[in-house]
Length: 487
Ligand SMILES: Cc1cc2nc3c(=O)[nH]c(=O)nc-3n(C[C@H](O)[C@H](O)[C@H](O)COP(=O)(O)OP(=O)(O)OC[C@H]3O[C@@H](n4cnc5c(N)ncnc54)[C@H](O)[C@@H]3O)c2cc1C
Image: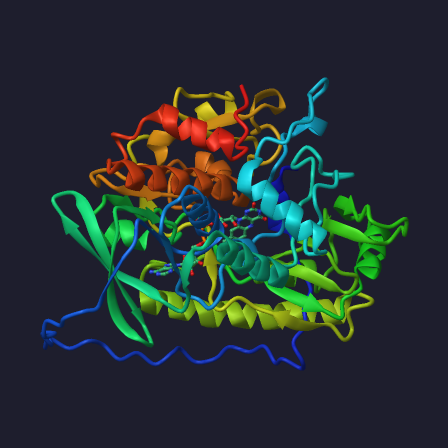
């Protein structure tokens, strides 16, 4: 059974004080009428920097760190009150710093992603906020290691490192539009409680996940709507040892990764239910898209419970998205009820953390000069303009990178089509769904962020556009910053 099939069987358990799950009436709608209001022009205060990064999520944090460390005056614009993005809101495990060596005979174990992402993860692990890179015991042909994080310590470390690097971090600040002149972005407009502001810069990076900056700048994009949305919540008062015994008693304990910091048998970093079939639980979990795979770095806390929901309409449409938020919250309540009812050790479990809004594996797909294909990924292709190497593929067994090797992400794949000084980094690139099942994963987004941040800073320093930047200069800078280039 591959991971997709497994996911179909999946379920989770949750909390929520006595939540009653029942259909609620449809949300009230107030349509727009046929009048328009013309906004008067307004003079805005101006700020000038070298590099602007829109979106302080998974990729954006690493883009900002790289740009600032390369010497650029860097501003990071993030709409929420913290940085980290989907890495602290959606994912189960951080896939993956390593190649899939355990799944292939005579395959050398290699840490394929190094550089700032690895520095970050090592530091987080040292703080007790991540698992490091322990080997998986079962399910190793999916990922041979399990790196997972404490979401709150991740957010704290992101702020700490951005501060140390001298990045100007504007949180609670929305990027609302772009000032474009003849295929070049001159500045962006932000909105916050302090009002609207114009930020002028030489280089820009779109790390918004949804591609807001690229779209506002007039770059071409598509909207594939090819994934479910999800709000992954944290569940506390949930004994993971009991969970393991429960799954084991049903012959369903899979994707096991044990906590190597202790000799105790029942401490885990990751586990998932496989082929679980309990009437009233499995079937109900399916109905709410609940996945039974989870990770933790604590004894009594499951870091991520996912309830998937495919948004009808468009995830870019405010009103469609609002309906989805309501539906997903209902599903989360139901998830908790199921856990409390069916899983021993979870009787008093409760929801301890949710994300401010649902996450999606992509909103807009931004067109770039090159679009890596799934064949290139699976064939372990490297390019003349590689900016990092990566190995993980989320499609399940049989779809992995050849022989446990790695592929390279080409520089051209982050240069936004038609705009001279704009990079895109994160889940918003790569149009082919299967190829995206690799490039969108967290560690790939982190590495892409570092590459884009370095390139943007070099462009600003040399006063050149992204297509004029010397690849040799970029490569030397990335190597100096410990980026690993595998062949
Ligand atoms: C439910 C789910 C589960 C996943 N599970 C896994 C997993 O187990 N393992 C794995 O490796 N990967 C997983 N992924 C994939 C991976 O986590 C994401 O693809 C990746 O984190 C995306 O990173 P990003 O930087 O592109 O986007 P994000 O991390 O979403 O960052 C975008 C940031 O931009 C900000 N932003 C957006 N618009 C604006 C704006 N206009 N102005 C200012 N700020 C803005 C957002 O607030 C956010 O912080 C999962 C994804 C999802 C959605």
